[in-house]
Length: 241
Image (cartoon, rainbow, N blue to C red):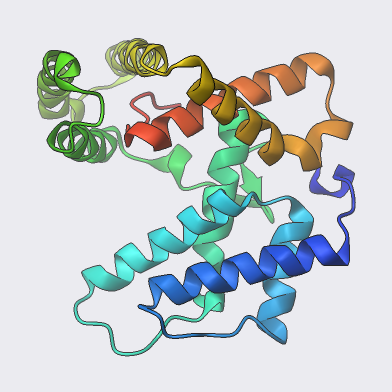
């Protein structure tokens, strides 16, 4: 499915989308208002027209700010234009995760698919450590997270030299670990919480639904729901590829 297959959205919906982005950017800039007008409005309106979910756009903005803060004290407020590459990259990752489109945005390959295995494991371990420290899954999950972290730490030590079947075996193992952790996280949700996340996933996918078969939409909906569960508990995606 190509982006051109998406339903057209109204000017009102685009304006609402741009207003939400402007409000979020204001919060990220510590209250300093940077207007989304003129060329910036056209840029953000383009995201809306492509079907970029708001939460995906927010995550892309967050990603830019994370790098910006890492460079030291901020010197000036961030304009939304600076966040474009990160927003499109996160949108690409989201589409890959939900199966909506191939892993390209404007013909560029997603950086996720190029990740070195060792670097991926290091990021996963950092996120798992943060999840445990924040007690996002409760004390009953501490042992599970510790076991996963220990296994991944050992895998990281060996990842640099892995090739061929050995690398494939580790990637397959990561997928098993990822599915186990995600299922345990799903099981902690009560029915109202699960229903709320399912509705949110359906809203995210609404711009793409008309161009998808029932089976494809079902798979995309489950993938979108899994992503929302990860976000709710701050869990990393352990699987790769």
